[in-house]
Length: 185
Image (cartoon, rainbow, N blue to C red; front, side, top):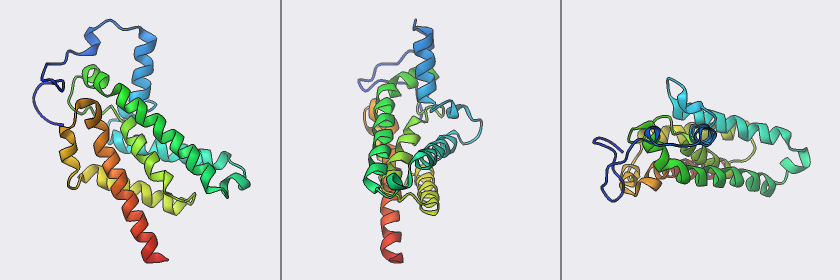
């Protein structure tokens, strides 16, 4: 999303949320979640920082599981899908708030959508370090370069536009992972 003043899907200007009255602890929670544990405040590459945090969370969860649970792919898929759905719902819920609060179109601090995309990729990745790193790298490449038709998704209503490009990057990464698997098997 680029250029111009912030506008709602109906074309009305959006006021900054910082100018509105909001309970401090609720605002703190919204910032904490929308910046994915404050990784959105990294000075360089906040999207990559959030993706790396999601990667670390994924591996931390796998390390907590017993060998029997790790050998059950459906259990890992359910846990990862839960993380994906949680991040997706929070992304959609906070997207228009973040646009107002950070006062920019596509604010770089709003990175929970990157975490949602990363968890979507991990649903389709076996609990293997190499495969997870390849999934991470592919997701970041597609998220940064935004191949067709990713940029067109920015024309969606504001609530969905911030999240849609990351979901498309995840889909591209998943397709590439499946193609790599077919070639290597």
